Image 1 (cartoon, one colour):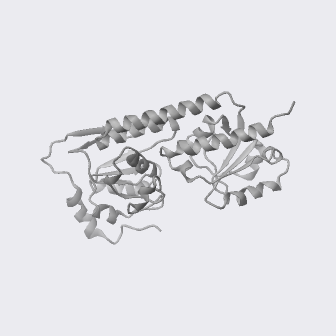
Image 2 (cartoon, one colour):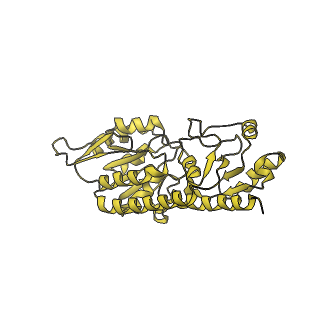
Image 3 (cartoon, one colour):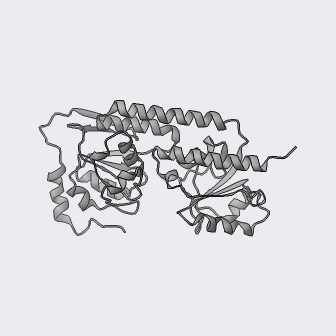
Length: 303
């Protein structure tokens, strides 16, 4: 539930004193975030609030999860992250709790956290680091930047190299595969999908598939049933919350002439890692690639 910061002016005002950098401190750390903005800190941060699930996962991956003192809903990877206090979600952030945690830096999710509240955090003179990854190939670089922020560049380099090698292996395995046209459904009523700028669309491409709405600039556009029917995808994937995918897919059986229905290529996919924008998205992508490949094999003409 969204927690408003309105009604807590006293603590918010006090927060300016709690989190403002010391005016006389020498700036000893300069890093660049995912948007290209420069962030200057007096020292390597020891208390981190991460409002981006993908960044939270990365911080644990490079060995600094113990510094994360607050995070957001859906920061479930790895399991240890679930023990960190939750202080908001994509609908709203609890600014009072953020201030009470006295963070050295707050990692915000560019495009995922409410823009007005990010601006409020800026006005409160918190140090903001913006995480924004839209492609699988962008994950290693984002990981390295967080390593620089956390003072563990060597550990981040090792994890980034592991990710790069895994992505290269997936690319090599599926590059020559038959291109399947795919409708990726991320909600049912209203009907939502992903545009070409979303990491999930990039995952489809890595698996040798084509997002039928890749030309759309919006990361998560609403589309009509008629638009899906006119593009006649060979596969429909329901990326749904646990227990809901098969119900979403059942609606498509009302259209027996749809290629995906004729091919029996309606895939339930309920892996929450797929949309987390962190390293585990690569694991989810590998699993999806395998499912798509099975449908290629099943639909291949027999000699």
